[in-house]
Length: 436
Ligand SMILES: Nc1nc2c(ncn2[C@@H]2O[C@H](COP(=O)(O)OP(=O)(O)OP(=O)(O)O)[C@@H](O)[C@H]2O)c(=O)[nH]1
Ligand SMILES: Nc1nc2c(ncn2[C@@H]2O[C@H](COP(=O)(O)OP(=O)(O)OP(=O)(O)O)[C@@H](O)[C@H]2O)c(=O)[nH]1
View 1: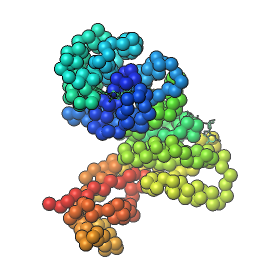
View 2: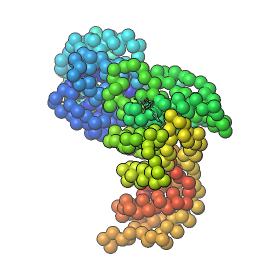
View 3: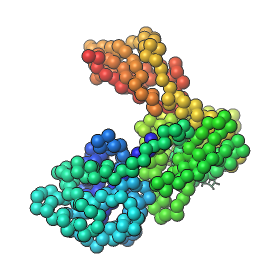
View 4: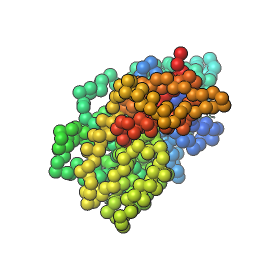
């Protein structure tokens, strides 16, 4: 589902990652007194008063060896390209600096919704000082303190007030999917080859508010698909497109909007670290996943090659055991015809609902095959299984004590579900609740 995107911009050390973490309510980034510390997470989800949104900390995208102002410029450009609302963060203790004024000029020309937040307003005097910041021309400055956690409610109110009001197109029955993968694995080639198939009718290419380009097409059976644009597929010619953090952030945002993700890897090179990161995110997000091994034409094959490749891949990506693997070539178009059908099946599996009565038959049989574990003299008891959500299928199992419900037994139950119903391609979530 598409959510509004909020990006935080500002000079180094104004407290972007501190505020990011506060809003994300998790201490996920490392906060240090050194400007430009390396941080891992720059993209997260948050919710305020029923408004869900994605949040980007542009400070986490670094441009080594670039002059100070170029770095800031790139970060602000990313915010302008990606975000619906930009939080422009300044420092109450330092007043308006030259860099702040430059950022203001860029933002001003971009005609984006901007919320001005004055950080490090830790005490009442500093909160008084914020009036100077009216001079930046973005209306009422909101005083906040990242370290104390004050003012965040007002900041979030100001942010959600700027969210676009247009509602999502509910009539859109198309299956949304994206292609994710390292540079050069052949994503663009696959897209072009898929859209170039005779049997595929490309119906529209639409630019959305965020400058992203999604492509709609219909397959032979009349099923509609929306291909979500990802960085690396259609380049906008920006310098920052080459940075890994940016690519990962774009991939995460595409994953958030997708029902199904085609995780593309290079059949010749195999799997790399960066691949795993993005695949892990898709798994956590609950997307359907298909592993697409591209450039299969370049691989010297005998009868065992495919099985060996599969086994190696399964070993490296154990948590993706449910994802089907398909070996294709964008060049020769081998097996590309299967992709729309596979996406459709995975999407159906992701929306599968199973009645509680049927589920409890499975549960009874499962317990008969493998009795529940005994942990330090306490036996786990499972009483009832019910499905509470789809996309991804999510089940609640009522037990005597959730602490006794260990990972191995969860896995066993999930496997029983997979053996009984077709959940190929979709993650399954299992939540243990104590029966009252
Ligand atoms: N006094 C005070 N210090 C703060 C506040 N918010 C952040 N800081 C401190 O300011 C420093 C920089 O914070 P960061 O969150 O890393 O700043 P940043 O803007 O993400 O920095 P870059 O990574 O360089 O872009 C840290 O030492 C924080 O502890 C605040 O509200 N009050
Ligand atoms: N032999 C062979 N070459 C391929 C295949 N698919 C892509 N290529 C080549 O691999 C290179 C990279 O392909 P792209 O489609 O640009 O890869 P990408 O993943 O979109 O790359 P970025 O745009 O950098 O993210 C190009 O030279 C393609 O011609 C394939 O199936 N077989």
